[in-house]
Length: 314
Image (tube, rainbow, N blue to C red; front, top):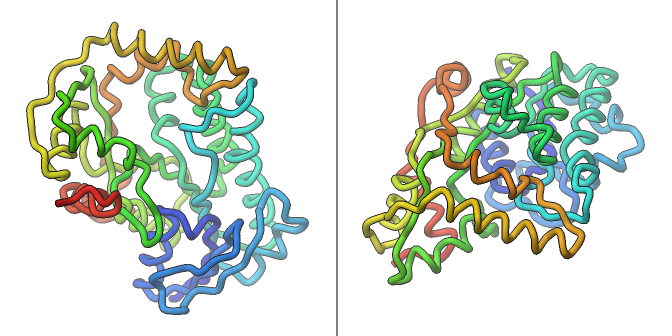
C-alpha cells in the first residue's frame, strides 16, 4: 500500500535520501522546506511546500491527508550560538517535534519518524556521565526523544557519510588536511558510522512498520584511527595515522571553549568535557536498526561518495 509522507527538511543530505528511498518504494512524498528552491533528483515527483514548522499556525492542517511524517531537520551539534545555548537547540530540535507529534495526532497521521542522534543512546548507556546535563545539544536530543515518545520511531544516528545533489558534505573542512602532506593523528576511542542510504532505509522501514521507540542505526563501529585512515585512502592520500594523546585533545578543546566563552557563545557540546567522551568507544549495537533496514550499507561506497561531494577525489 502506497503511503503519503511529509518529509520536513527533505532538501538536506538525509532528507534527500529519505525522499529518494520513499519514492523508490512507491510512496507519495511532500517536502516541507524552510527556503524555496528545487528538490533535485526526483523528476518532479515531489510536492514541495515552503515553511517553518516552528512558525506553522496549524501543524494538523499541514499533516492532514498524510499517512506519516519524517522530521529530517533540526539544529546541528556544531552550532555555537550565543550563551546560554540550550534555547537555540530547544527551538531547533525539541519544539518542532513536539508540534509535529501533536499535529499528527489531531490530523490522524499515525506514522512518524524522527532523525535523532546517537548521543541519546550513549546517554542511556552511561547515565553517570550526565551527558544531558553537561551538553546543551545532547539535552535537546534527549528532550526531543521524550517529546516523540510513543508517537514516533526515533532513529539514533551517528556520523553519516554520503552526498546529495547541490550539497557540500559536512566533512569538507577535513579534506585539505587529508590531502596535505601533514601527519594524521587521532585519539584513542572510536565511533559508530552510518551511510545516508542506510538512514533512509531505516526511516522508510519504520514508516512501513508503524514503528515507535528508539532505534540505533549503524553500519560499522570504527576506531578514530581506522576512520581517519579510510578517509585518507578514499581521498587518495593513504598514510599512517598516529596516536594523539588524550591530554592534548582535551587541552585543545578547552582552549577553543575559552575563546567561545570570551565571545559570550556556547557550543552545543561542552568542550571542557568533550575530550573525555570522544576517547571512549561510541559504538552502537546494530540489531534494532537492522529490523528496519534488513541489512547494512557499504561504508566504503559512502566514503567515496563523500569524497566526490567534497571535490577531493583525484
